[in-house]
Image (cartoon, rainbow, N blue to C red; front, side, top):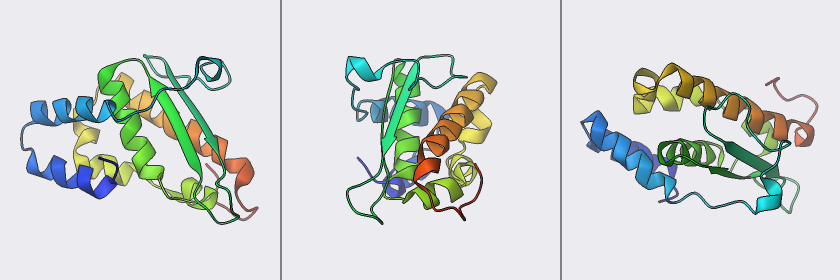
Length: 144
């Protein structure tokens, strides 16, 4: 599964939070692994209770989507990280900076069901991803 709309539709179909939680864990299985040399202090997301690393780089052409890769240790966190990667998938650096992740989190009901620590970690991940994309954005892009 790699499409944000498919994830949203599945969440809509699953009425119980326990089922949604297990679905997030399943999504975590879709998250790739970073090579050991990329799991360093420069790429770690500070603010997460579990270790999460994220890298990003521009696509091959000028207006191609920005590419993010990430890894997390905990199954539920892997699922949440995978979700964030899908939110930013296919976006240019400018679009990454302009993306409002709160809208998707509310749409999925995650704003109501994540612990405070997981909220903090999610926002730390979003800020890290936007900071990675910022140097590649045009000078008139929104601030992170």
